[in-house]
Amino acid sequence: MGFLTTHVLDTAQGVPGSNMSVSLYRITNDKRELLSQQMTNSDGRCEGPLLKDDAFTVGVYELEFGVEAYFTQANVAQPSPAFLSDVTLRFGIAQACDHYHVPLLVSPYSYSTYRGS
Image 1 (cartoon, one colour):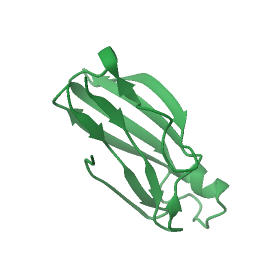
Image 2 (cartoon, helix red, strand yellow):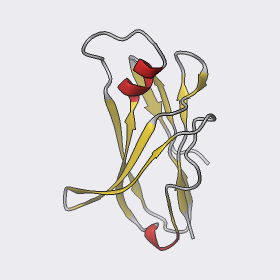
Image 3 (cartoon, helix red, strand yellow):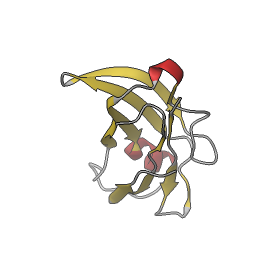
């Protein structure tokens, strides 16, 4: 069975994005279903897979990261309103037997992602 993981890297400070909220949604017919909410640990990772076993199915998903709250808590200067608030990544899972790793590299003014391993 496949599974889904993520981690956050704070590229502005060169550290893991610890204590950032991460919400996972399944998208079906343009409707969002909340599957889980977690906080990243000191290494910028969620404790264990976000999706696994029978819940890990082919489909469209979103990861939503609480970027503004993270940088506010870290005392990183941001404009008001912040340039980035919540970063939402919509992605597809095409193979139910694969490991999908979807990291977020983020600063107060930019972000990027990729399918990792």
